[in-house]
Length: 112
Image (cartoon, rainbow, N blue to C red; front, side, top):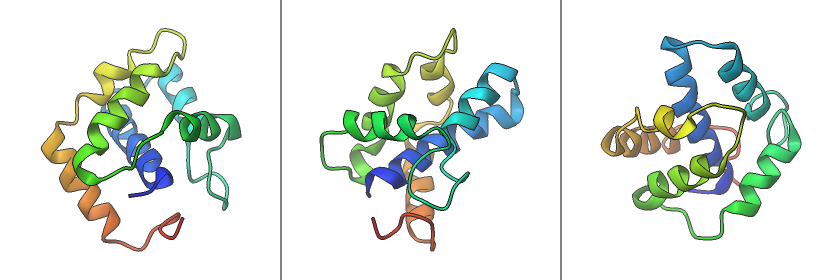
């Protein structure tokens, strides 16, 4: 799993929560984080992905990806959003299953 794939999975996890719990603030966060706004590998607001890449310092596997993602989410300060609680709505087994399914498909950033 590469950094862009992990970034995208974090986006998916938070977006899944947003689907059932929409809010303007969370929508703003997701809009800035979106890995799908542009064709390149990154986020809608480029420094969001750059900061993510700078934060990740270890090799990412499916097995450790949830913990790495949780550490990253915990580092994000976006107004009063409790992104950790939002992220934790996805349990680790569903996360791993989601990662396996995502990685098995043809997707943007697969060859990064």
